[in-house]
Each structure stands twice: as C-alpha cells, then as structure tokens.
Image 1 (tube, rainbow, N blue to C red):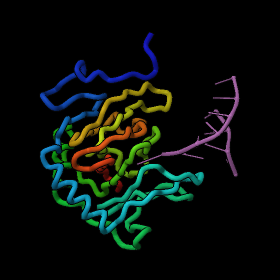
Image 2 (spheres, chains in turn brown, orange, purple):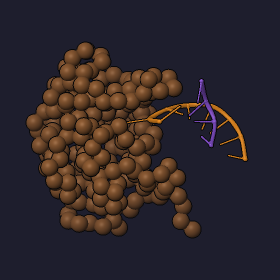
Image 3 (tube, chains in turn red, cyan, purple):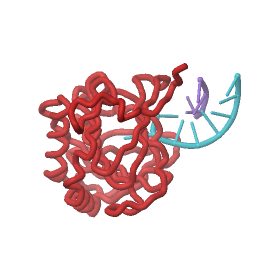
Length: 221
DNA sequence: AAGTACCC
DNA sequence: TACC
C-alpha cells in the first residue's frame, strides 16, 4: 500500500539529460548547477547581507521563524504580526533592498530557461539562511502577483531535505536532498505546490560552516 | 500562518 | 484541525 509520503528515489527518477531531474509536473532539479560559481555567489550574498542584514521575522500569530532572512531586488519578502507581503523598503534599515547581483540574476534567468520558462524577470530574491535545527514548514508561495513566473531556488552549504508536496495540504510529499550548488525550478502546474524544508541536520560545510544558504527568485509583481 | 498545539 |  502506498503511503502519503515517500522518498524520491533519484536513481529511478526521470533523467531528461545528465543534470536535469524531473521532480514533478514542471518541477526540475538541476544537480550542482551553480556549484562551480559557488564562491563568487557566496561573496555576492555576503555583500548583500552587509547592506540588508539577516534577521528573524515574526509570523502572524506571534511566533518567530527559525530561518534568518534578507532580500535583494526591487521587492523583498517581509513578515510581521500583521501578515506577509512584499515591500520595496527593508523595514530594518528603511532603505531600498540591495540590487540582485548580476551573477545571481544571470543564473536564475538561465536556469529558468533551461526548465522551460523563457523571459523570467525576477524582481525579488529571498535569502533564507538555516542553522542546524532551522526549518520551513509546508507552505505555498502565494504572495506574488505573477503566478505565471516560476520559482527558482539555489542551495549552498549544508545539505537539506526538501519537501515537495501537492496543490493541497493533504497531497503526498516527496522528500529529496538539496546539496551545495543545486538548483530547483518549479512553475506552471507546480507553481502553487506546498513545499518546505526539514529541520537542518548539524554539520560543517567547507565553504559555509554550519549554515545552509538558500536563494529563491520570484516575480513578485 | 513560511507558526505551534493538540486531538482523533 | 484550530488557532482570533
């Protein structure tokens, strides 16, 4: 009897080519897509974080997210007791968010194109930083105006178990590792899938120590 | 509710 | 599923 959840056996997954792994309908994992440029990417992220520091955000209901976040781009994702939204100003500094570094933008756009999403013009890049124990519960990305644009996610540092569910909370959830340099792209019929990250396991990464850094690019509108 | 608690 |  099939359960409601299950591991995605990547050795049995459909390989479109050597690096592109189908996760679901219109959802693709590009193993190690950004690995060769990881050093430059991490340096660009550090530069953004000097201008828009990491912070923990409150969610409606009063709890605090375990993940530390910042943003770059025209819009940044913010949350407080009043709710979630995209904002043009960083509430921490009162200034506009830093621009998306060109290298990151180029990777996100080229990655989206390789997944079949032409002319992706992200205006928001969320920076989610996980330390051991940090997690992201199953949720939908539903605050963007343009749901035709995909979500492009880049992972660096410690490995994480990604949870990729269905269009309802009750749908089955696939779990698979996201490793340093991996890119995940989902959109179209998968755009509104529930997804999340299991609590990060302790570890030490040569480049990032006890951290996982995730960049997600969206068209917030 | 990108949160937790608790119930069935 | 409920949470105000």
